[in-house]
Amino acid sequence: MDFNAWRPEDTARRFSIMGASSLGTFLWIGLWLGSGLNPLLALLVGIVAGVVAHLIAFPVLRALFRR
Image (cartoon, rainbow, N blue to C red; front, side, top):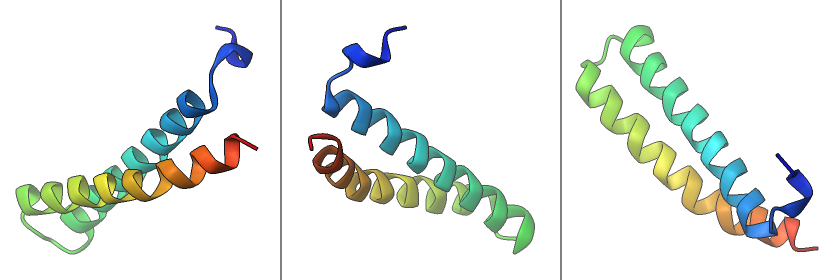
């Protein structure tokens, strides 16, 4: 795979998805196992946190990688 062929938007999207999915998964497992929250409610919180993290991180990373 040629990483140099990626456009800045591709790189920013991939990094923001990677970070958001990691955060969402960590929150889901932490809320479910750590605090004893209902697994479905913890999953919903993890999904919402992941989506919000992606929506925040994508424009920031896109601006950073366009430099």
